[in-house]
Length: 613
Image (tube, rainbow, N blue to C red):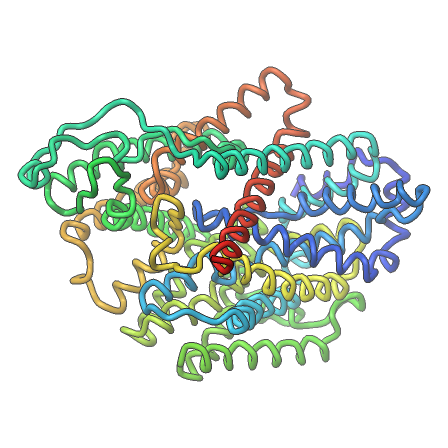
């Protein structure tokens, strides 16, 4: 709570006056459109990143910096007139955050998993409508939760506070703000150049000079040794994952490196020796073949660690549900700045109908299951919102697995309901939790929640249109392109694995993978228990079990790049302790955005070349 109370300190008085005077002036057409357009572009970054490593970024601060710099530049050309106000920036970054979070509506997990399993693929218009339906449910769900979680319970929502502080600093310290914008743009240029060089010169990961002797079944089949290239021990000539490592920090990055070395250097050779995993061509990477076995212990580790950690939030869950249905809870209109009750009721009915119809028409899901999926979104959103508000971590992995389990029991054997009805529930809940952070920022700036809801809705529309196009251009053939060296897609692997168990049973698993799953589940549970029960000073030196599990589903060179990026930021923090907190994160975010956008540009070029050919 101290973080909330201190959120407004150390801000210039003129900014406080500006915040107090601006609320009604902040809701402008240019603010809404700027947010939708910026967020749509940033949604490409999250889709690109999500299909690479299964993670996405909160784009609120990045969007705020870009909008600030964009309109400040335009104002400079117009003699100083037209710079974006702080309230406008808040409305803009709110819409941008909603658009950028469209990846959580299924584009990086259940949708490609469904295509891989069934062989079916949605057309572009249908994909846009589907993603839009999930995103709008998330926006509508956030409306009634704002009052309970932000006003009544006064949850901190640290991510929202960080964005609010950033906005206030931008408008209080103009010179420093311009420097941060320049750093962001410089990072984007560096990231884009890195991608262009990789594409032009066809650079690939450089394998390390070692090999591991083969034994057992592999040796009997004529394999003498497993090379470093086979096992993905290499150095990748790219800045993207280095920048991601700089953002996630040393503990997660070193945990991934530790997990990667064990998974691909010890466990995979053992599985190959036993004949559980398939060998590939002698000179190639065996990631695509190896991950089919490796994902089972890795996914089990991540899923059971997330669920165990989530179980410790039972008090929060109880409070959230009790608050949702108590007298004076979030369903009661308390503030005239909120979305009116009549408008909320109409939006709720429209979102329920829209989502349910999409599930029935596109995936032949039974109507009652479709309705249950949407209604369950409210319950899961309550839980996700409270946990995210208290810890700044949205339990996306746990949300997805809980919903898959639920629909696995309600409609056993049906891949579509297990993936796509769960897509609505998990995706909407995840997006709702992210949007609540932006509503926290709005409460600091003085924005009206009804204005933020409108901006979020427009942002979701823009993100659905652009994000769906980016997904289809990047991954025209999910079955052939994903779970490969180029696109590891660990989130897809996780959703796909769980859906296959419910659809086909344990017999569909590769040989020996059940043993790996059980051991991975045990490690995940024990690791999560240790993180919760041991003193924090001990936990900070322990590996993150979720990060270790993730390393089972990505290449070793990805984990190595993570560790390199985290180490560089750590060294920078020692050499330049004042510079690093202000600029390192911005630089990393810029590199990620630049390389992601350049990657999509490369996909566009290849698509047009294919059409021309």
